[in-house]
Length: 172
Image 1 (tube, rainbow, N blue to C red):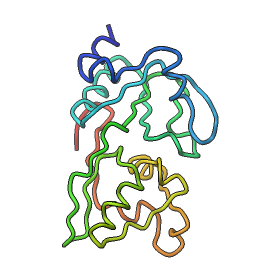
Image 2 (image 1 turned 60 degrees about the vertical axis):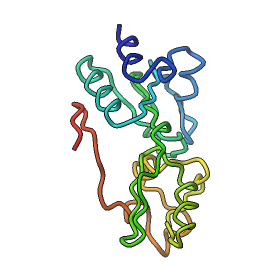
Image 3 (image 1 turned 30 degrees about the horizontal axis):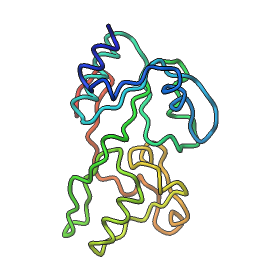
Image 4 (image 1 turned 180 degrees about the horizontal axis):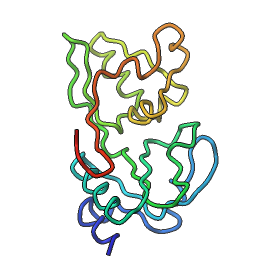
């Protein structure tokens, strides 16, 4: 029933439950491993909020995940539960050149953001080694830096605001 409810929200193609599918989301750059019970790929904040409400009600742990390149183990589902993968939320919603602000979804690949702002004559400094595959949401979670961090700072220095979904599914 739980998988059916998840599928009704995100679509069956965005709920992965076979062992082979789940295996790919049980590790990150640390190479530690714990198998999630299910992998869910929300496509927008409303879906993510519903997943969190459902998980909270059913007492399932949820592990947010970008591309899985982190080196802290933060996205590893150590207690099973749900690996919530944000790579489908990968849109750059706005680049405001006047105020030098980009509004992005968490699954935007860092290199893609670099390329888009550079087309407009702007510069986004954080450049983690994994920038060709790592996502902005994961960069925020890990406070990613890279070689430019010595001069320009790390990801947290470039975050002006966040839309966040609480564990109870409230969007703030």
